Length: 418
Image (cartoon, rainbow, N blue to C red; front, side, top):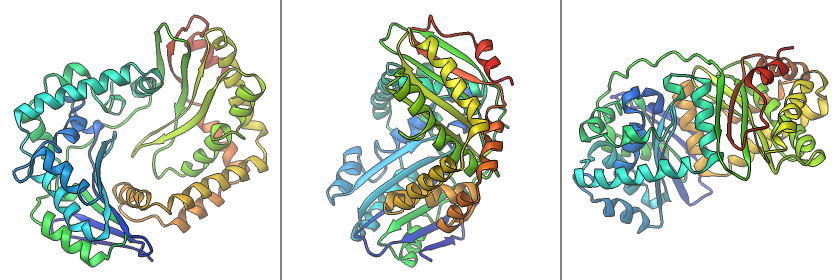
């Protein structure tokens, strides 16, 4: 057993995955709040805060934060998602104390200087603009927004430009107050001894207080339709349905079905839509899981004329897959998933993030052996049942580009009504 877990007196959880055969350590703080924990009037504050904590503390300037880690050959980064926020570093084993100190400093001592705030606001607004100008990126935000219409889980991670433009220091101070000891998991993977990491956690996070985190809005999948006619060379199209949450009994079956449907060059969608029909360059299926809901969908990019044929063809492949899946396809998908998981274990970054996510979602480590056993337990009939479930909800459509040949939302829905 390489994983060890401890809880500090203040409720902060500390988890390590020791891999003594490597020279580096990936470590970080994963916080159990994200975009869905924002108010509508503050959409984008979680991501803005992620930027601002790197802009200076009571002990370090913005340059110090960047320079100190890079001076030892390390990397420091962060990301915001809809349900959590992460601040992490990868360093050589001897530099773990510096990395822990830096992450603790930016999370507890950021000053949110007003000049830095104005400067970084422009950076974030540029980031939002860049995504809006990239249709194969922004289409996923529109898809999520329609799937969870007028709900916190449907809001974009980067936020709305008009909201980010008015966020001020007080808003950031209020939001970072959610970063309490009971809401943080500190994890490390690589050449690390658990007792040493716990000692560092106690030293740098031991004085952090627990907080009361507001209860999340209950999520309701709605489905819906988003279309934006743009003068582009390609039409970008997303078709999806309600998926499965973390911990759902069909979680692994849904991932197996998505893999065999559109998870690689041997998948049904790739072989039919690209190889046999030549309708697309890019097509794939995906699953997104959250604490209490999930999404399943297919993305494709095609020409304006080809769009008329693409949508019926994709719908036909998906519907036919319910009844004529083969054991060979399910077995191939099982092997693909297992290989992906096992190969991912070779990366300390993957091990660190996986452990953190498991602690946030399940409150414990889910061993590789447990995951592999769950995957191997998914048989042909279970996959078919899950496929029926995934395709039974109201669809969600998002499309950007020349859309004159895209049939109506109701017409697409009728293809799955049976």
